[in-house]
Length: 183
Image (cartoon, rainbow, N blue to C red; front, side, top):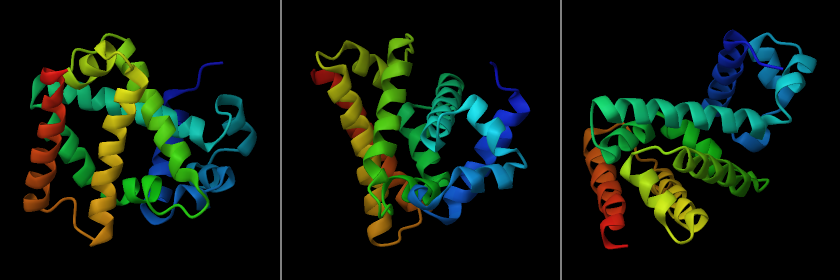
């Protein structure tokens, strides 16, 4: 059964709003539904759990990043902007979990990277993942780099949107993403 675009966007918006304030471990399906003004049974008609919704959110974000990159800037620039804009969400998704949902969140991101890579995306990061001898390991390295940047931001409560921090993130990602030239 296909989900309506409005319902999908309402659920994603609700999840983003909740992730702005709390860890994914603390977020319940009930909270997501209440914020989206959707009945819980409707949620389960389309998603198996909050991580299934998260996977759809990550896929949408990656598709939007790829669209921007094709018309605007290099992948490291686009990704650093995304990290800067969504620092708090990424903190609550990848760093501050106390119940161990960090690994599950990172697995969702990793799986999305692999899916996008196998769709034939021409972004050099996804080409690198697709062409690697171990695509799943390469996807983990890329998602791990993002997690490490978010951890770095979190450790000293750095502002991911600060222009100097953005430049540091962009430079670091550009170095990492250039590694495919040496594989």
